[in-house]
Image 1 (cartoon, rainbow, N blue to C red):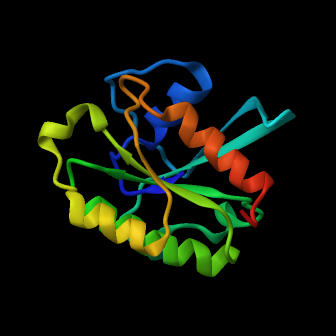
Image 2 (image 1 turned 45 degrees about the vertical axis):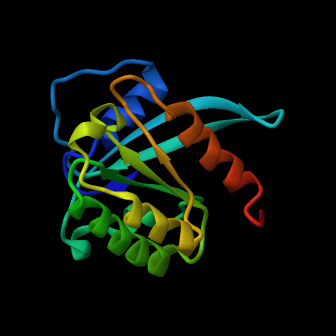
Length: 160
């Protein structure tokens, strides 16, 4: 999980792993590691999720946190357009460190679409790059399972 601060990375992980949401904001320092047993297309395994500290400075992501990654989720806050710009920059940094691995973009806080700054042209730009994305909400659970299981599916079958 990578993205700017306060985009909902930890909340998405908590919703997926524990099935809960809290309005209390907790800043992640460094990395928080969770895991969850999942079954995708009949294959069972333990998904290990690294929730990286929110950073707007690309140089501050530790390469040791990226080593060995099989995939990643870029998280942006739909109500703050600049977080999508940062996610796009993070994609470049992560891909430089890991090589081409599967990823999905989570445009989070879909429960607040009336406050969204990310508009159709930005979504079209993602589509034109061939980047998969989902409109998610950690608060109400929208597309959270699909996000993580979709990434798991891509990691199991990266050529597709």
